[in-house]
Figure 1 (tube, helix red, strand yellow):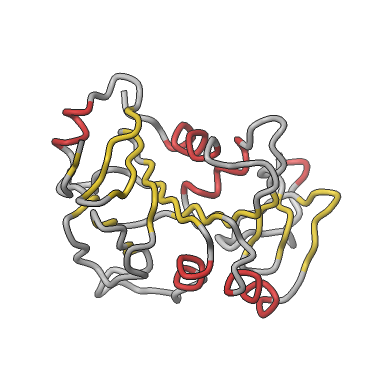
Figure 2 (cartoon, one colour; figure 1 turned 45 degrees about the vertical axis):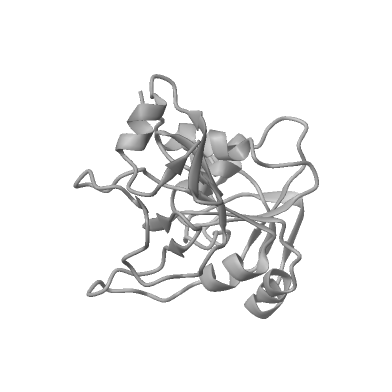
Length: 209
């Protein structure tokens, strides 16, 4: 069976290494905060001005003043720091963030990413996406493998407006894990019950051995 949203987030959390500073994008990536492996110290950074984000709160722990970039309530940690957006983006643009785990609407086989707008749809703004993909050391995308119509979201070339070109290194979908390599995408891992043939069939992008 394909992974659900929480299993995808848990798999993405396995990419985290001790001592990293990590930014989590809106959507499935925000769930990664709940699955940081035991013994791994990771500091989560949010572009709205928070460094050191804890797991999502229980009903008793909700503080409406503590939110992530996706406007979801979060918890603070003993070492949490707060600052303005200028300071936050200085961290991102200055290369201080080790990894960004982002959602996407499309990813191309060469690592291009489109994750900020669909033409004709209301868009609140770019957010931190362009700065993140340009400033962090490693970009991982977590998203469904296909759209609601069953069409692949892993494409030979993105059809939506690009956020950045050639920045994605690894893609984690509900079907498995793929890396961006020379010539296309390489299957690294399949979800339980999913075969490599299943992934190839659901992928428009070139899948190389």
